[in-house]
Image (cartoon, rainbow, N blue to C red; front, side, top):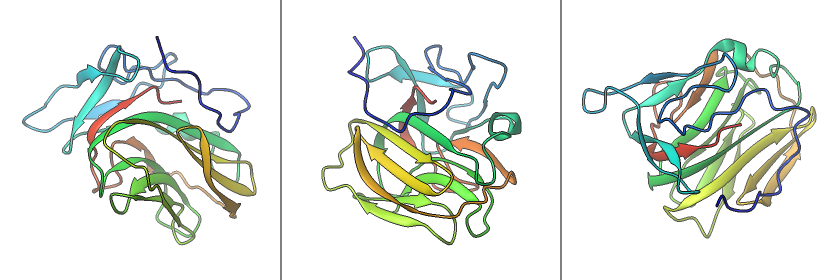
Length: 193
């Protein structure tokens, strides 16, 4: 059985859901992700997820890029929420996701600046949040924006919120398991929404 749902910001409607049950980034709709593998792992692989099903395994050299159409309606100052489960074998310098641009207020993502500090990456107006009980197990992460405030949830608990003026761009497509050119995740991801 899947763990109880976590309280998170309530999106107006789910744009897409990726269960990774088949070990790929296939969507419930038409926005399939593209897996970029390494020579050691050229094809997407799965591992056991938090609910006992499958999750997408990443080994620190792989990531998934999603088509620009996926984020086309959540740019600028449009409200949005991105949630996922992740298990990290290496915490520091692991990115969960990002999209946007490397301009002030133009980015939207999460990555670990240290083993206990997650960075809410907004570019130029970032926020570092300490997670004192961080470990290498499965955890649920949600980053939301309502048009004026950013909110971050960890395992269903609000860890930070604050006013931010976002102007998220479309230069960088949604990438799960890394940031543009760096911070590749070593672990697994599941149930991206």
